[in-house]
Amino acid sequence: MALEMRDRCERCTTAALPYDAPARICSYECTFCVPCAAAMGDVCPNCGGELVARPHRAVPA
Image 1 (cartoon, rainbow, N blue to C red):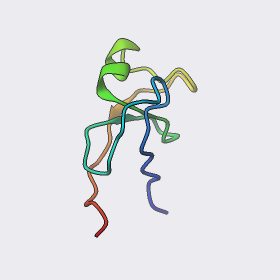
Image 2 (image 1 turned 90 degrees about the vertical axis):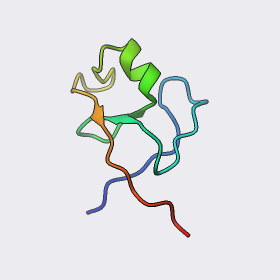
Image 3 (image 1 turned 90 degrees about the horizontal axis):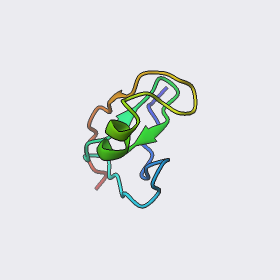
C-alpha cells in the first residue's frame, strides 16, 4: 500500500505541498507544512502521534 501524498497542510490549508516539498506526517498520514508542525510541537492534533518528515516522491510526469 502506497503512502497517500496529500498536497495541502491540514492546519493552514493554504500551504501547497507538492510531492517533493518538505512536510510532516503522522502514522495516520495526517499532513502538515513544516511551520505548522513546528508550531504544534511536532505532535499531531488529530491523533496525538509524532509528526515526522514525510519521505520524498518524484513528481509525476
